[in-house]
Length: 93
Image (cartoon, rainbow, N blue to C red; front, side):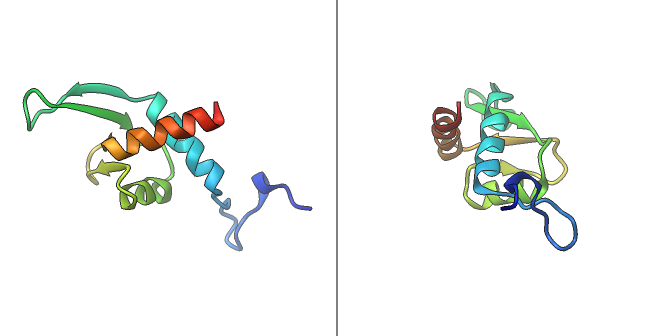
């Protein structure tokens, strides 16, 4: 039986499991902070740094968990993303 943590594709990249994606969402959320929106005064944003594999961040954006701008070094959680991150936190921690 192969260890899931060491499985790799033919090109040698690690296989990203659903569990790893869930844990990335939790860590992204736990390392985030709330700040005032620059575009909409009075609105609060929950932001986190982009220190995670881009294929995971892109998938989170497709699922509408986060928004990201290609030139920015951080992402913004959507309300849906915060809820999902809190569910994953409860599941894994």
